[in-house]
Image (cartoon, rainbow, N blue to C red; front, side, top):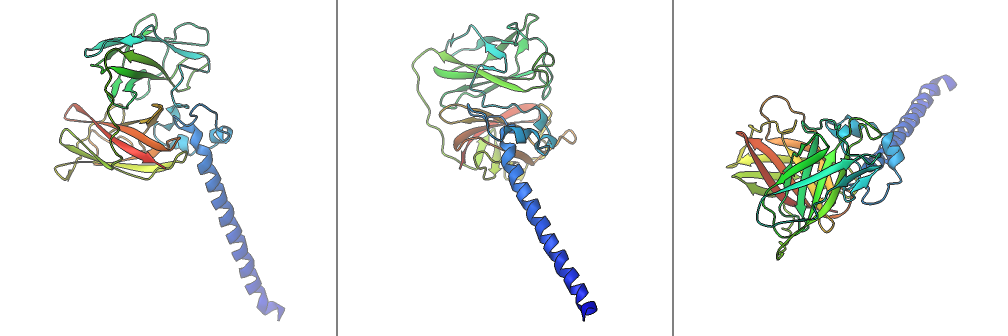
Length: 309
């Protein structure tokens, strides 16, 4: 009798053990997905996340292309960890090109001059008006004394925020990605543009950009961008800044910054039509997305509004 029931008992024990292991694995996965939020740009939003310590111990996000150089923070401060963005330019003229000059001072108070290359550039500079119009993405030039000059295109009157994204290549902040910003007033009568309603598609230069995904605030979600033209898939996307598309987002109301690196690796001279991104936006509300891609040597910038729940 005992000999005949022993295999059944063994089978029940194995089933119980398998169920327990699956439950433990599921709980582990749920915990790690919540802890990853502070590793993406814009996740602090002025405060440190309680999960920041565990986020550093989570390797999965760092394994994604470009994720190891993503800045922590929303970019709304001019200083972080001893580094400070400084500029004498507090006002600029409207209706014409302008040169915005700035320095990045290190913890010793002196202008830093040693920066690592990130996406083929040592510094990425962004300008955005308070109503999320007038987006500009510039790669400034640094003089020997550490002064950077960003040559801005025509600016409309109003309040603007200037962002500098950089990674020191020496000193206390070596290897740490920063995004710092300062505000500038462009003189003249201001006319604000209402933010366009949230939409999945945007048109630019005859191309149609479609964004698929349902990101939730503070959580990582996949996002897919598809580029078409005349209803046909676009497969001649050229590498731009070590990727087939560059995606930047700004939050309505406070212009908080987020840089969404692609998870699609560059594989050859041409890419498309579908590109994958990991979207992890810190707060709910409307975000204005700016997708930059290149075809035939020409850079295109598509803009659309994404609502994050």
